[in-house]
Length: 148
Length: 149
Image: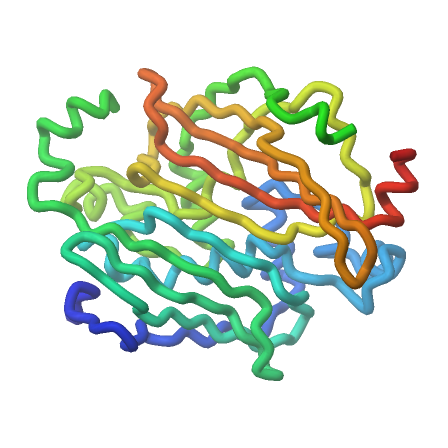
């Protein structure tokens, strides 16, 4: 088990290479997210919109990018997640997800994150601030305070 | 036209973070970690319950901003920013609304572009912020002119 807290500036989280993007991925995401814009699922509609073919939902790629941090959910959570969409993702694209630690202090860790396609082009980039838990957080007392 | 819309907001909508919806969403981004769906794993975690993935708010209902008519085509999602005070818990109720936070224009190589900032917030029952989301939508000159402004 590796701890996110052990990372030093310049270190990266384990890179994730997604399976080539498939139509069924985007149909599933449309259903789960409620975003039924047909440019993400139906070829004719994508072409009518001037696209060469269907494109992934930007939020599908962003949702995937967040999972770089899922293994560390016991240590903390993503407090800030800011993304710029830089390029479109098409069917059969092979997307690689990356996060590199820029800076940290006792509780906050700033990462530079990106999703890169098979042509080494960034389709999105941005930053994640990962907030490490304090020892007492989410104790019974604090959960009572959150009133949930 | 968008400038005048700054500050207008939807009514508040009560959402329940449904267990099945969270699992389905985790499956759709291929991030099916036990913390998102396994009750035992949730209980044994430091959150003492299941949580939702960070981009899960895309599934929630934030209501509609009155009189905000966005073009059906030519709108580009330029940026997306989430902020969390804490993770969203499975089963909790989240009170959601959306508003026009800002609108500004900039001249670039493709003409004069409009930037519309739509803010969404999720609050707990005591109106404490759980998360916020800003999405920046880019409207190009041709589309803006097509809308008559």
